[in-house]
Length: 344
Image 1 (cartoon, one colour):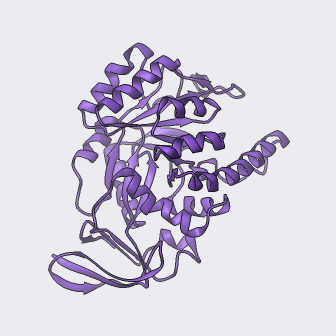
Image 2: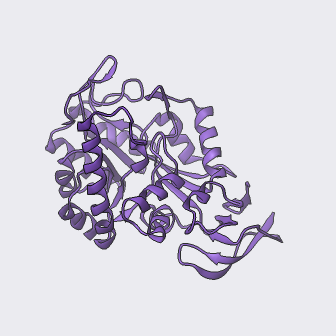
Image 3: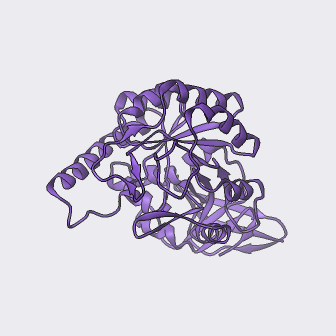
Protein backbone atom coordinates (compact mmCIF):
# COMPACT_ATOMS: atom_id res chain seq x y z
CA UNK A 1 0.00 0.00 0.00
CA UNK A 2 1.00 3.60 -0.59
CA UNK A 3 0.11 6.69 1.40
CA UNK A 4 -0.71 9.40 -1.14
CA UNK A 5 0.18 12.89 0.01
CA UNK A 6 -0.88 16.25 -1.40
CA UNK A 7 0.02 19.81 -0.40
CA UNK A 8 -1.67 22.65 -2.22
CA UNK A 9 -5.01 24.40 -2.65
CA UNK A 10 -8.07 22.51 -1.44
CA UNK A 11 -11.28 23.03 -3.37
CA UNK A 12 -14.04 24.07 -3.45
CA UNK A 13 -13.15 26.37 -0.52
CA UNK A 14 -9.71 27.43 -1.76
CA UNK A 15 -7.60 27.07 1.40
CA UNK A 16 -4.07 25.68 1.68
CA UNK A 17 -4.30 22.01 2.71
CA UNK A 18 -2.26 18.95 3.50
CA UNK A 19 -4.22 15.78 2.77
CA UNK A 20 -3.41 12.08 2.67
CA UNK A 21 -5.11 8.93 1.44
CA UNK A 22 -4.18 5.31 1.97
CA UNK A 23 -1.47 3.93 4.22
CA UNK A 24 2.15 2.87 3.94
CA UNK A 25 5.14 4.59 2.38
CA UNK A 26 4.41 8.20 1.43
CA UNK A 27 4.35 9.36 -2.18
CA UNK A 28 3.47 12.87 -3.32
CA UNK A 29 0.66 13.38 -5.81
CA UNK A 30 1.15 15.71 -8.77
CA UNK A 31 -0.96 18.83 -9.21
CA UNK A 32 -1.59 22.14 -7.46
CA UNK A 33 -5.29 21.85 -6.64
CA UNK A 34 -7.28 19.03 -5.00
CA UNK A 35 -10.92 17.98 -4.72
CA UNK A 36 -12.42 15.14 -2.64
CA UNK A 37 -13.63 13.50 -5.86
CA UNK A 38 -16.53 14.25 -8.18
CA UNK A 39 -20.01 12.74 -7.85
CA UNK A 40 -22.24 11.80 -10.78
CA UNK A 41 -25.66 12.03 -9.14
CA UNK A 42 -27.74 11.07 -12.18
CA UNK A 43 -26.13 8.28 -14.16
CA UNK A 44 -27.35 5.27 -16.18
CA UNK A 45 -24.60 2.67 -16.26
CA UNK A 46 -26.63 0.19 -18.33
CA UNK A 47 -28.08 2.64 -20.86
CA UNK A 48 -26.29 3.95 -23.93
CA UNK A 49 -27.42 6.09 -26.84
CA UNK A 50 -27.39 5.10 -30.50
CA UNK A 51 -28.77 7.45 -33.11
CA UNK A 52 -30.31 9.56 -30.32
CA UNK A 53 -32.19 6.53 -28.98
CA UNK A 54 -31.51 4.92 -25.57
CA UNK A 55 -30.30 1.31 -25.83
CA UNK A 56 -29.46 -1.27 -23.13
CA UNK A 57 -25.83 -1.96 -22.25
CA UNK A 58 -24.40 -5.20 -20.85
CA UNK A 59 -22.32 -5.65 -17.71
CA UNK A 60 -19.00 -5.29 -19.52
CA UNK A 61 -20.10 -1.94 -20.92
CA UNK A 62 -21.31 -0.81 -17.50
CA UNK A 63 -17.95 -1.66 -15.94
CA UNK A 64 -16.14 0.13 -18.76
CA UNK A 65 -18.29 3.19 -18.11
CA UNK A 66 -17.37 3.04 -14.44
CA UNK A 67 -13.68 2.89 -15.40
CA UNK A 68 -14.06 5.96 -17.62
CA UNK A 69 -15.86 7.82 -14.84
CA UNK A 70 -13.08 6.94 -12.42
CA UNK A 71 -10.43 8.24 -14.81
CA UNK A 72 -12.39 11.51 -14.96
CA UNK A 73 -12.18 11.85 -11.18
CA UNK A 74 -15.64 10.55 -10.27
CA UNK A 75 -15.62 8.92 -6.83
CA UNK A 76 -19.28 7.81 -6.76
CA UNK A 77 -22.29 7.50 -9.03
CA UNK A 78 -25.97 7.34 -8.25
CA UNK A 79 -27.44 5.08 -10.90
CA UNK A 80 -31.03 6.23 -11.29
CA UNK A 81 -32.48 3.46 -13.42
CA UNK A 82 -31.36 0.59 -15.58
CA UNK A 83 -30.79 -3.14 -15.60
CA UNK A 84 -31.24 -4.05 -11.94
CA UNK A 85 -29.39 -7.37 -12.34
CA UNK A 86 -26.25 -5.36 -13.12
CA UNK A 87 -26.58 -2.10 -11.19
CA UNK A 88 -27.61 -3.66 -7.88
CA UNK A 89 -24.72 -6.12 -8.15
CA UNK A 90 -22.27 -3.27 -8.77
CA UNK A 91 -23.68 -1.40 -5.78
CA UNK A 92 -23.41 -4.43 -3.50
CA UNK A 93 -19.82 -5.24 -4.50
CA UNK A 94 -17.62 -2.11 -4.59
CA UNK A 95 -14.49 -2.78 -6.62
CA UNK A 96 -10.99 -1.49 -6.06
CA UNK A 97 -10.17 1.33 -8.44
CA UNK A 98 -13.78 1.98 -9.46
CA UNK A 99 -16.28 4.57 -8.23
CA UNK A 100 -18.82 3.56 -5.60
CA UNK A 101 -22.29 2.85 -6.97
CA UNK A 102 -25.55 3.84 -5.29
CA UNK A 103 -28.33 2.15 -7.23
CA UNK A 104 -32.06 2.60 -7.72
CA UNK A 105 -32.37 -0.59 -9.73
CA UNK A 106 -35.19 -0.52 -12.25
CA UNK A 107 -37.17 2.35 -13.73
CA UNK A 108 -40.71 2.59 -12.36
CA UNK A 109 -43.05 3.37 -15.26
CA UNK A 110 -46.17 1.66 -16.68
CA UNK A 111 -46.57 0.13 -20.14
CA UNK A 112 -45.78 2.42 -23.11
CA UNK A 113 -44.68 5.22 -20.79
CA UNK A 114 -40.89 5.28 -21.16
CA UNK A 115 -38.22 4.45 -23.72
CA UNK A 116 -38.73 1.05 -25.33
CA UNK A 117 -36.26 -1.69 -24.56
CA UNK A 118 -34.62 -0.30 -21.42
CA UNK A 119 -37.25 -0.96 -18.75
CA UNK A 120 -39.76 -3.52 -17.54
CA UNK A 121 -43.20 -1.90 -17.10
CA UNK A 122 -44.78 -1.79 -13.65
CA UNK A 123 -48.59 -1.38 -13.53
CA UNK A 124 -49.97 0.79 -10.75
CA UNK A 125 -51.49 -2.14 -8.88
CA UNK A 126 -48.05 -3.77 -8.60
CA UNK A 127 -46.10 -0.69 -7.51
CA UNK A 128 -45.81 -1.45 -3.81
CA UNK A 129 -44.84 -5.08 -4.38
CA UNK A 130 -42.25 -4.05 -6.97
CA UNK A 131 -40.77 -1.35 -4.72
CA UNK A 132 -40.44 -3.83 -1.86
CA UNK A 133 -38.74 -6.34 -4.16
CA UNK A 134 -36.28 -3.68 -5.30
CA UNK A 135 -35.44 -2.74 -1.73
CA UNK A 136 -35.07 -6.42 -0.77
CA UNK A 137 -32.55 -6.71 -3.61
CA UNK A 138 -30.45 -3.87 -2.21
CA UNK A 139 -31.73 -0.69 -3.86
CA UNK A 140 -31.25 2.44 -1.75
CA UNK A 141 -33.13 4.69 -4.15
CA UNK A 142 -36.34 4.23 -6.12
CA UNK A 143 -36.53 5.85 -9.57
CA UNK A 144 -40.02 7.02 -10.45
CA UNK A 145 -40.62 8.07 -14.04
CA UNK A 146 -43.43 10.42 -13.09
CA UNK A 147 -44.33 11.86 -16.49
CA UNK A 148 -43.59 11.02 -20.11
CA UNK A 149 -45.26 11.33 -23.52
CA UNK A 150 -47.14 8.33 -24.91
CA UNK A 151 -44.82 5.79 -26.54
CA UNK A 152 -45.41 3.79 -29.70
CA UNK A 153 -43.38 1.03 -31.35
CA UNK A 154 -40.84 3.58 -32.61
CA UNK A 155 -40.50 5.46 -29.34
CA UNK A 156 -42.11 8.60 -27.91
CA UNK A 157 -44.85 9.79 -30.26
CA UNK A 158 -43.74 13.14 -31.78
CA UNK A 159 -45.86 16.08 -30.75
CA UNK A 160 -47.56 14.23 -27.90
CA UNK A 161 -47.77 16.04 -24.56
CA UNK A 162 -46.16 14.72 -21.40
CA UNK A 163 -48.70 13.06 -19.13
CA UNK A 164 -48.55 11.64 -15.57
CA UNK A 165 -47.64 7.96 -15.48
CA UNK A 166 -49.42 7.12 -12.22
CA UNK A 167 -52.35 8.49 -10.24
CA UNK A 168 -51.49 10.50 -7.10
CA UNK A 169 -52.63 7.73 -4.72
CA UNK A 170 -50.26 5.24 -6.36
CA UNK A 171 -47.36 7.70 -6.11
CA UNK A 172 -48.15 8.34 -2.45
CA UNK A 173 -47.99 4.59 -1.78
CA UNK A 174 -44.68 4.26 -3.63
CA UNK A 175 -43.13 7.08 -1.59
CA UNK A 176 -44.49 5.79 1.70
CA UNK A 177 -43.22 2.26 1.00
CA UNK A 178 -39.73 3.50 0.15
CA UNK A 179 -39.51 5.83 3.13
CA UNK A 180 -40.74 3.16 5.54
CA UNK A 181 -37.73 1.06 4.52
CA UNK A 182 -35.21 3.90 4.78
CA UNK A 183 -34.89 4.37 1.00
CA UNK A 184 -35.40 7.58 -0.96
CA UNK A 185 -37.27 8.47 -4.14
CA UNK A 186 -35.83 10.24 -7.21
CA UNK A 187 -38.48 11.43 -9.67
CA UNK A 188 -38.04 12.07 -13.37
CA UNK A 189 -40.41 14.98 -13.96
CA UNK A 190 -40.52 17.58 -16.73
CA UNK A 191 -43.94 19.16 -16.23
CA UNK A 192 -45.84 21.09 -13.60
CA UNK A 193 -46.44 17.73 -11.91
CA UNK A 194 -43.21 18.52 -10.06
CA UNK A 195 -45.13 20.67 -7.56
CA UNK A 196 -47.45 17.80 -6.62
CA UNK A 197 -44.54 15.37 -6.33
CA UNK A 198 -42.57 17.66 -4.03
CA UNK A 199 -45.61 18.09 -1.81
CA UNK A 200 -46.02 14.30 -1.81
CA UNK A 201 -42.49 13.90 -0.42
CA UNK A 202 -40.06 12.91 -3.19
CA UNK A 203 -36.44 13.30 -2.15
CA UNK A 204 -34.89 14.52 -5.39
CA UNK A 205 -36.15 16.14 -8.58
CA UNK A 206 -34.55 14.85 -11.78
CA UNK A 207 -34.69 17.35 -14.67
CA UNK A 208 -37.49 19.57 -13.28
CA UNK A 209 -37.27 22.35 -15.83
CA UNK A 210 -40.54 23.99 -14.72
CA UNK A 211 -39.87 23.81 -10.97
CA UNK A 212 -41.09 26.96 -9.18
CA UNK A 213 -39.66 29.08 -6.40
CA UNK A 214 -42.34 27.75 -4.05
CA UNK A 215 -41.39 24.18 -5.00
CA UNK A 216 -37.74 24.88 -4.20
CA UNK A 217 -38.60 26.44 -0.87
CA UNK A 218 -40.59 23.33 0.09
CA UNK A 219 -37.89 20.96 -1.17
CA UNK A 220 -35.09 22.89 0.50
CA UNK A 221 -36.86 22.99 3.85
CA UNK A 222 -36.42 19.22 4.10
CA UNK A 223 -32.95 19.10 2.53
CA UNK A 224 -34.04 17.70 -0.82
CA UNK A 225 -32.00 17.51 -4.01
CA UNK A 226 -32.36 18.69 -7.61
CA UNK A 227 -30.37 17.29 -10.53
CA UNK A 228 -31.22 19.55 -13.49
CA UNK A 229 -29.20 17.50 -16.04
CA UNK A 230 -28.67 20.58 -18.22
CA UNK A 231 -26.22 18.79 -20.51
CA UNK A 232 -28.92 16.28 -21.49
CA UNK A 233 -30.60 18.88 -23.69
CA UNK A 234 -27.56 18.99 -25.93
CA UNK A 235 -26.32 21.98 -27.93
CA UNK A 236 -28.77 24.25 -29.76
CA UNK A 237 -30.18 22.63 -32.91
CA UNK A 238 -29.37 24.75 -35.98
CA UNK A 239 -32.43 23.25 -37.67
CA UNK A 240 -34.81 23.99 -34.78
CA UNK A 241 -38.11 25.60 -35.62
CA UNK A 242 -38.80 29.07 -34.19
CA UNK A 243 -41.13 27.44 -31.66
CA UNK A 244 -38.46 24.98 -30.56
CA UNK A 245 -35.85 27.72 -30.29
CA UNK A 246 -38.23 29.81 -28.19
CA UNK A 247 -38.97 26.90 -25.86
CA UNK A 248 -35.24 26.41 -25.37
CA UNK A 249 -34.74 30.10 -24.66
CA UNK A 250 -37.53 30.14 -22.09
CA UNK A 251 -36.21 26.98 -20.42
CA UNK A 252 -32.71 28.47 -20.17
CA UNK A 253 -34.10 31.70 -18.77
CA UNK A 254 -36.20 29.87 -16.18
CA UNK A 255 -33.38 27.58 -15.08
CA UNK A 256 -31.03 30.56 -14.76
CA UNK A 257 -33.53 32.15 -12.39
CA UNK A 258 -34.31 29.01 -10.39
CA UNK A 259 -30.85 27.53 -9.78
CA UNK A 260 -29.55 30.39 -7.59
CA UNK A 261 -32.88 30.29 -5.72
CA UNK A 262 -32.43 26.57 -5.12
CA UNK A 263 -29.14 27.28 -3.40
CA UNK A 264 -30.70 30.10 -1.41
CA UNK A 265 -33.50 27.83 -0.16
CA UNK A 266 -31.17 25.00 0.89
CA UNK A 267 -31.77 22.59 -1.98
CA UNK A 268 -28.82 20.33 -2.78
CA UNK A 269 -28.15 21.16 -6.43
CA UNK A 270 -26.45 18.12 -8.00
CA UNK A 271 -24.54 17.26 -11.17
CA UNK A 272 -25.62 14.37 -13.37
CA UNK A 273 -24.37 13.07 -16.70
CA UNK A 274 -27.69 11.35 -17.56
CA UNK A 275 -27.18 9.43 -20.83
CA UNK A 276 -24.99 11.81 -22.83
CA UNK A 277 -23.25 14.33 -20.57
CA UNK A 278 -20.32 14.48 -18.15
CA UNK A 279 -19.89 15.87 -14.66
CA UNK A 280 -17.38 18.43 -15.94
CA UNK A 281 -19.81 19.49 -18.65
CA UNK A 282 -22.60 19.81 -16.12
CA UNK A 283 -20.47 22.05 -13.89
CA UNK A 284 -19.92 24.29 -16.89
CA UNK A 285 -23.66 24.33 -17.63
CA UNK A 286 -24.52 25.22 -14.02
CA UNK A 287 -22.20 28.23 -14.27
CA UNK A 288 -23.87 29.28 -17.51
CA UNK A 289 -27.24 28.95 -15.77
CA UNK A 290 -26.63 31.24 -12.83
CA UNK A 291 -24.41 29.52 -10.26
CA UNK A 292 -20.96 30.73 -9.31
CA UNK A 293 -18.07 28.46 -10.24
CA UNK A 294 -17.58 27.55 -6.58
CA UNK A 295 -21.27 26.69 -6.18
CA UNK A 296 -21.17 24.54 -9.31
CA UNK A 297 -18.09 22.67 -8.08
CA UNK A 298 -19.84 22.16 -4.72
CA UNK A 299 -22.76 20.62 -6.62
CA UNK A 300 -20.32 18.09 -8.08
CA UNK A 301 -18.50 17.41 -4.82
CA UNK A 302 -19.36 18.42 -1.26
CA UNK A 303 -23.08 19.10 -1.72
CA UNK A 304 -23.57 15.77 -3.48
CA UNK A 305 -21.52 13.92 -0.87
CA UNK A 306 -23.61 15.38 1.95
CA UNK A 307 -26.91 14.64 0.21
CA UNK A 308 -25.97 11.09 -0.71
CA UNK A 309 -24.28 10.28 2.60
CA UNK A 310 -20.78 9.67 1.22
CA UNK A 311 -18.36 9.61 4.14
CA UNK A 312 -15.13 8.04 2.85
CA UNK A 313 -12.07 10.28 3.16
CA UNK A 314 -9.63 8.33 0.99
CA UNK A 315 -10.66 9.94 -2.33
CA UNK A 316 -8.41 12.63 -3.83
CA UNK A 317 -8.47 14.17 -7.30
CA UNK A 318 -5.77 16.67 -8.22
CA UNK A 319 -5.40 19.21 -11.02
CA UNK A 320 -2.51 21.20 -12.46
CA UNK A 321 -4.81 24.13 -13.32
CA UNK A 322 -7.44 25.77 -11.10
CA UNK A 323 -10.89 24.40 -12.10
CA UNK A 324 -12.44 27.60 -10.79
CA UNK A 325 -10.79 29.41 -13.69
CA UNK A 326 -11.20 26.59 -16.20
CA UNK A 327 -14.11 24.24 -15.27
CA UNK A 328 -13.36 22.07 -18.30
CA UNK A 329 -10.13 20.93 -16.58
CA UNK A 330 -12.31 18.83 -14.26
CA UNK A 331 -12.46 16.22 -17.02
CA UNK A 332 -8.68 15.71 -17.06
CA UNK A 333 -7.25 15.45 -13.55
CA UNK A 334 -3.55 15.12 -12.86
CA UNK A 335 -4.12 12.25 -10.42
CA UNK A 336 -7.05 10.22 -9.09
CA UNK A 337 -7.06 8.25 -5.83
CA UNK A 338 -10.21 6.25 -5.04
CA UNK A 339 -10.53 4.71 -1.59
CA UNK A 340 -6.77 4.87 -1.12
CA UNK A 341 -5.83 3.38 -4.52
CA UNK A 342 -4.32 5.56 -7.22
CA UNK A 343 -5.89 4.82 -10.60
CA UNK A 344 -4.48 7.77 -12.56
